[in-house]
Image (tube, rainbow, N blue to C red):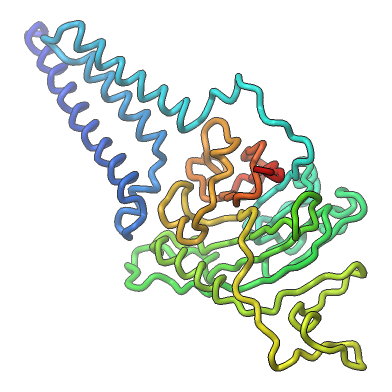
Length: 379
């Protein structure tokens, strides 16, 4: 074989293959950004981490520049410049590494919130793992039955306020003033192929808990939604989010009010009803029922949908991503050992600002936990 002839040919065909691969990656980016998960088929493209696609695209462009034959040095410099620009985009826009050198916002009076889905994973030192994160408020979905809540509350210190509804749990340093829980009852996606795996955790159809915490500076209390959505990867997220939003908006009570003695009373009965001799409440016939949850200051939980997808806006229109306020570095919460997908999210309302955001490994569950520090935004 004449290597002097073969090597340029190999380089030429390698360059063409890299250009073709780069074109495919560009298509993935365009579809993922423009179409997102507006359709069932495109959601799987949208779930591809954009930073991973950008790095792969940069490698293809740089490699094509190296492998191209008969090209001027200027063409190679252009290829390397484009590749460098893509990497810079990921570091600056996706990962926001500029925050590593800029002074961060003040954390005075910030509320430190830990959000975690252990997904029923058994662990002997559950309370120690949670307390390592030093939360003021702990929002938990699907804890294992052997979780030691007594030791967890002791670690929080007195006073501590707790609530469990369905499989959702709240432990807080701030008093719980009002709460409501609703099963979302999201139905499985129809026309599932027989070969598509059915996740064990999707049977419940999801649930949502609204808690109003008596946090200083928040008029009427800080409104927190803890949401846990089904993990069925076949389900179209556009429908899932719309169904979840409809279930929350269709909630008609009762909201519960917790008094200073720790007693939970149906709010509508307390406001519009009358106290009965045996200590219960009887609502008046004209009592106005609740109409959905109040707008959240913080919506957090396992949405089983990557951050940035269009469908999230159907559940939480007008909310912004806490990572956009204070996140830094690669973003992902699942799976824990290789967190490529940010399916655990924290979304903020206009009254709050995130001053810190991180995803931490509390092991051994399959999800990383989110740590968000938020404070009242006086703007």
